[in-house]
Image 1 (cartoon, rainbow, N blue to C red):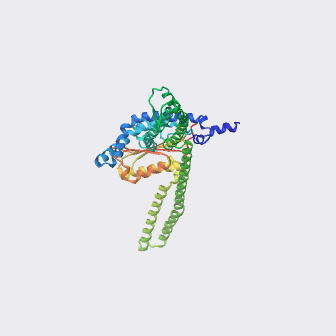
Image 2: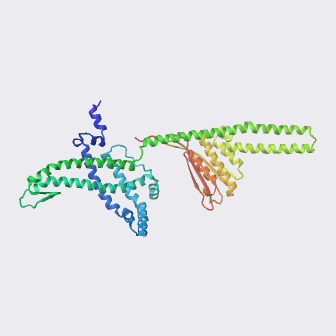
Image 3: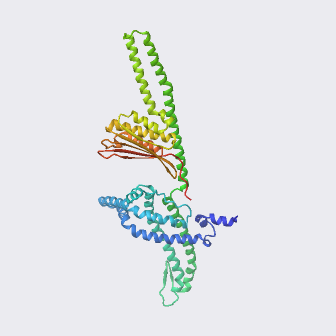
Length: 455
């Protein structure tokens, strides 16, 4: 068990050290000095590298009071283009360096907030140029230039003053030396310069405290712009979103089944009974009489309504999907489709109900599009289940051999499929070149477990 003094030493921060009486005797003063010196070093390199990128924008700000409005607008627009195009290429490596340097004065998590880019150079550019973490780093690069100038000016002034005051007795040691001007004072000898030399430690102390304050303020700005939320917090938020999404999906599926059950066991059964009653009523009527013809017409309409309700129930949630699983449900869809459909769905086990329901919906919508909009002469449906480290993944692929050219922006069917798949945490890929075929590939995770935190 550690002593209280050791525990306090571990939990003390730079700000608390600055407010305490032992700042000049502890390690924080050396950390602040190291951070200040590396700020000047990194800022100098950044000034040389970023000068061509930021100077047009800075020049437009300087010239804003001039009458050359056209030149100001041109410089401003040119500066914006330069920052947008080249700013991330400078800011991203700068952010990586600054997050590591931040540990000197503000120890703690230093996650970047960047996403993992896809493979390839284009994937890297597309990811980095479209995420907020990159543009926060670009903003930090501009702030870093200002902090570099402030730090260099203040620290340079205090350091130069300290050295000058300390060196005045040695400068005036020779009687032949010219008088030394120190503001309103004219110093002619080392004795006259001695009080100024004794004041140099005060400026040295001011320099050390200035380094601490500048380092702390710089560190706060760097952490706010460069450090993303901890992975544990992201995983917690992801877990909450996943659980909420699962509850919504389960509630939606429950409501669909309730509607299907009410239609199947309620309205459909009453219509069947009505059709039977109308058939029994014909027994008491003369054949081909006006009343018989009206009863026959009413019975025909009731039978048509029964067929429509059966189709509606099958579209909401087919009974075969619940009782026998996805392969049987896909085979039933193929039987009812006017286009010849080949189904390959040899799945080794059942999937969660919401996954089966989503896969069925995708295939049903794809088959409807195939025979209503594409005039395809054949369709193939393939479904398989593969095992991955985080659980099973159901893959469903529907290919129709039509003219192709499917565009999600021209209708809501493909968009609705993509939205429903996204709600389940899956992905949907569409390939539909002109001339065909049109291929829709959907991958649905069969688990909603969140990823484990990497240790």
